[in-house]
Length: 308
Ligand code: NAP
Image (cartoon, rainbow, N blue to C red; front, side, top):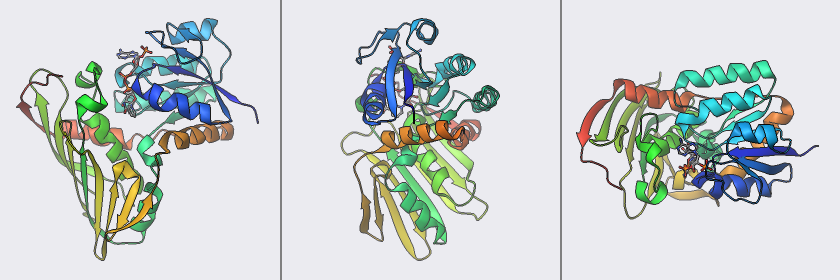
């Protein structure tokens, strides 16, 4: 089996923390170059842009896009037109529509498009899905509260239009929700708190449901100091499941079931390699559609300016 040669575009926090080590740890993959405006040094040649990498860089098979969502489509188009497989960081685009366009181009080019949702690869997610399938659930409550200053330092793009604000982490919870629920979920109401000096919400509440009338609520907060909370609680007629630590841990009726170390990005890259070898694509836009719908129906409250 030949090694898949990968280039990364955008060497920021997630590329350094997760992509570079996950590629290095996978014997089927090799990082051969990066496209980096800041000429980041991760031990491989760095080029000013994807265009420069494709023109002057080493041969490669695939591109991982780790830039902010607002600029992802242009680089994805360039990579797909060059016949490269593409790994999209989450969210897969700045709009729902542009992802469909990329899927069509990938199919035309005969290459893989992978819209990655790292939280779906958290250790507890398959067990949560199986438990839900075997129970009659009545409600789901998501509490996703983190400190933006700690996890997103200096990321001005997150506050701009298309940057999603608190939905940048919140969409991770929605990616788990859409994976574990047995029926399609849709938004019924939302409330967004938008700081007066930025474009994106710092906190949000969402109400959702499905055809069975399951009550689903989500609270997202970007100003949580102290302990950080990434929890999903599922209540059934005869039990309760709690996914915590972003999906790495599960408790059923108060007893721990799965507690595992973080292996989300190795899992993502295994899936990317499998999709490439199978000649398939995977681009689920449902988490992004839920966020888009929250923006559509959400009432906005202006709140105090966000100063980093
Ligand atoms: P980041 O630290 O700001 O890095 C983004 C990088 O993209 C920049 O360092 C820059 O790298 C490049 N870039 C290209 N065009 C840019 C532009 N117009 N504005 C800003 N940067 C630009 O952000 P990140 O946290 O790595 O997030 C990137 C993506 O990964 C986001 O979609 C985010 O949702 C996702 N993600 C982040 C995390 C996390 O914990 N941070 C977790 C999972 C997923 P160069 O200088 O090399 O060009």
